[in-house]
Image (tube, rainbow, N blue to C red; front, side):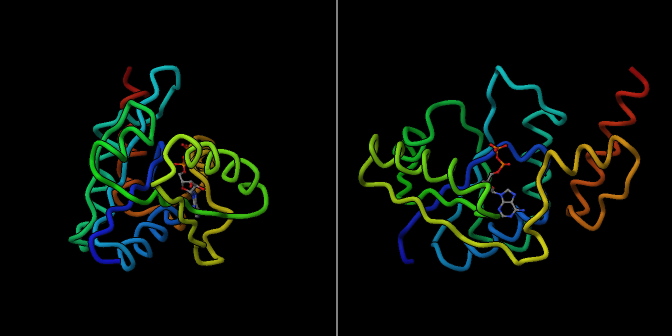
Length: 165
Ligand code: ADP
């Protein structure tokens, strides 16, 4: 969509192949996709924001119209600030629907000019979530089928650092 900037926001703690699938699909539709990494001071993250952003940058190197940014404000305010007209979201299953529907309508209420667009991932990614990946990894399972290489390296690094600390 010529001229349309889409924002794909989330924690990305860490980036999964499900997220990457949505980013790729979005990059094929919109002129620019800004992947916005949320930094909510009240949340505990496994990877710090800089590391999460590096992982996304590394994993989207082949997509020239994808950028990575950090945001702390209300998502619609961030969108207005950077001139984005679309909020991109991924829908995995019915379990995502209620939450996504609620925040989608709230965002529209606050910012009627911004449209929320939902994309479906490939079926093989539907069960993947950041929290599931973290849980499998922390218990010693192999998460490589679910994450890009850069995520796997960041997880190993975080574990090694925690082990030393
Ligand atoms: P948060 O941690 O803020 O809930 P996430 O990083 O988990 O955010 O997700 C951000 C967006 O990516 C959401 O729209 C979510 O539905 C979508 N998403 C997460 N995992 C997948 C997946 N496996 N397939 C498709 N979309 C996904």
